[in-house]
Length: 182
Image (cartoon, rainbow, N blue to C red; front, side, top):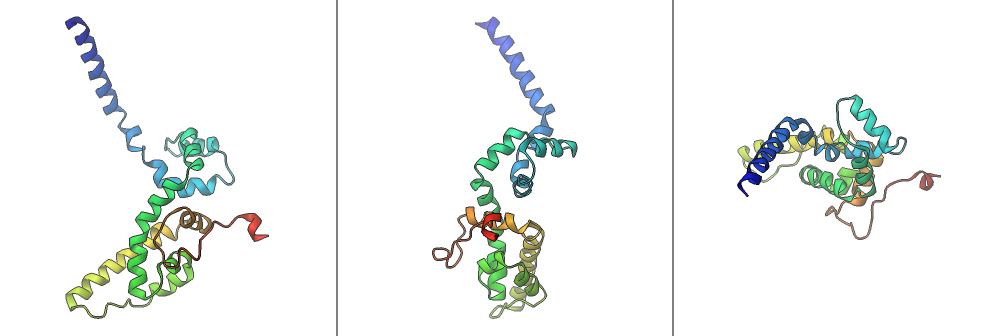
């Protein structure tokens, strides 16, 4: 039994060393989560293999199998994005007295409100200063992480994600397809 233990310890040590050397791969494990909206959009015109090859040419390793699996089951990726965006949309909506769904669905309304001062009535001067900072961060998050996505990706996200939007039971957001626009 002692003879067997030494080779296993060596094997285990090699495994740990290999894991350290493979840090690049490990760092890219969440890549599909970050790139999913763009992969989704690209998948309308490219195969999973073509997307994988293109990403690899840019120094990103993401297998065609991983891409295909994510596209077959997009709900968790859309939910993750929605969970990251919803607090910013809620804060922005409350500050500008607009429904969260209108913030997320209407880019024109969002951008027109970006230039208007938010409502922070009923707070102290220090509270107002803090609120303005938080609202500015929410605005930047929405602008940089939500409204940079193609509209069809935003619509798909809202269709799959279980956001707590007002009137969500009466009005479902659905992704726009080419057939629906004809």
